[in-house]
Length: 345
Image 1 (cartoon, rainbow, N blue to C red):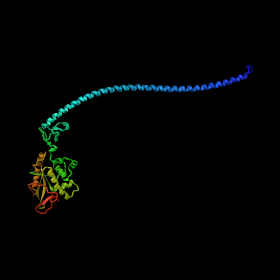
Image 2 (cartoon, rainbow, N blue to C red):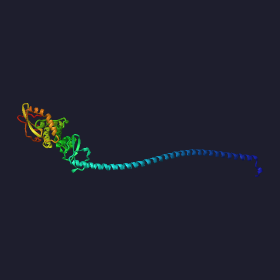
Image 3 (cartoon, one colour):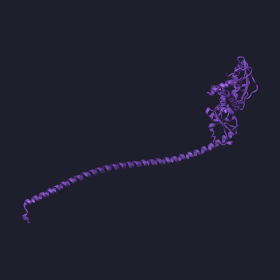
Image 4 (tube, helix red, strand yellow):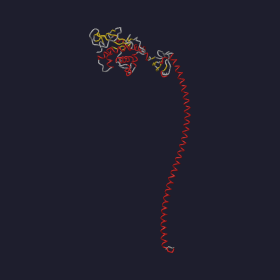
């Protein structure tokens, strides 16, 4: 078909169709461009946020690095100070050890000369003394140590003897109840220790002893001893208490190395005479550490006890005798002239 065959109407329709197509295409492209623009703006916004975060992190990193450098510097300073302190401490330790050795040598020499040194100043595990033995003793002004069998040449205060110088009964009497039970499992031995302590320690309270006179420093009747035992051992029958009297007397005589004695004494009650045993501590008994106390106690109580003794209508057998056997017979009193009940009834 030739150009002459194309009509103006046909050309216009074709152009309009093409224009419409191009317009639609343009609108699509504009819409797509708008989306991309929005996407770019979003990405740019995110990029800005990331950049800001990165800047913050870089600032924090710089701060941390500064802090780390400061800490490193401080650590170096402390390391130097520690090294200096350790050297000074080592020097002081060597000096202290040298001084301690010198002091121990001086203490050992003084102990060998018979000195008594304060317990808190002596290292008993380090000081070198003969046989590696020291004794503790108590004075008025504190606790001291000495070599065994060495008296204090200064002797400037009264002394409570060292543990090894005491009688066995004194050693037991100083123990508390729990320690005494772990040391001995016999009732008479424990009662003997309590009986001795009741005489020697005024704070005990239940004391069956009475003050003596003339040649007797203190005494306790067998009948009083029986009642005292029943107070110390609740639930003990009267019969068994009588047996414990003799066993306790046996124990205290043995543990005191016979510093005490047993004597018979004739007494009168209701016009009848009977003989009762007494456990006595003679005035001249050699009791370690009690010489001064015994003299003062006898001076304080001798007069009144002598007066009461003169009115008792009694006489005392001079010879001491050992207690009877554990059969329980005649434990408290022995009838002298009549069949009279004992003094403990």
